[in-house]
Image 1 (cartoon, rainbow, N blue to C red):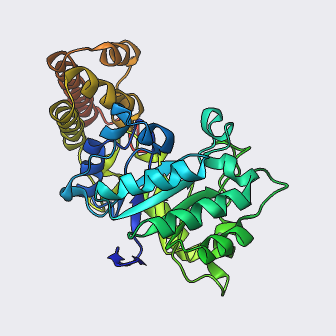
Image 2 (spheres, one colour; image 1 turned 120 degrees about the vertical axis):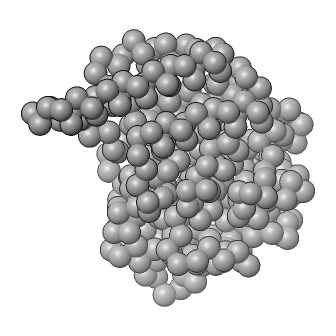
Length: 334
């Protein structure tokens, strides 16, 4: 699959852009484990042109994570164009336009998936951003606003005609948010449309590489994007299984990367979401109090000590399982 001159190879697996999740430390780990392409957290166009410090920091990328995309969102045409120009100067491989975020504070203000209620404006933003920058522009969106407005098959053609070089489709409507089951049938229909010549990337309810492989086979998509299933699991992209010890090593490394690149306090905050979501610790009995302590830890030494305690408890459970055939270690794989 190629996006402009970016060659992602056959059947690429991409890391979805996610707020408070896809910081640079997490992206680097996902890339190491096999992600074909990664994206930053989404960036507010309005905040970017106002030079908000925390937003500007989101533009920091590393050559080690390439190819990397920066995703922007907003509802004002001029702001989106100006933001795209600023983003281009940060040196990403592409700019992605977020027309799919369903959360109220974004979609409710007409940005993200809110654009699905104003297609002419969505298309004007797309056209003007494409004209304003020299790197590839792509779009991520949903099937439609609700089940009565499943417009993606027509919308895909329109977005292509306005110059985007790839389209990622999340298989839900905005009204579904993240509930129910992603519908890949319409994603497949878009891909099979003989008028479509840009890459189509499917997204939604992919929890493993096996499920990604099945999506390639069944729907013929050019790429698969994985989002929420990667929380606390940057190794999800790896074809080689990791031991529990190795997974804890990765989580500890993620913590250290975040602390080194930001600072101790915020580095811990960036890592907490992953520690709360990782399936690694599901094998530990009565884990609730340990989890609370983990999420309250304010210093790296304290948090690393808790992780090491978890490692020892998992090793102990493993040893008990070996000694007693009747005891089974709970499945800790997602």
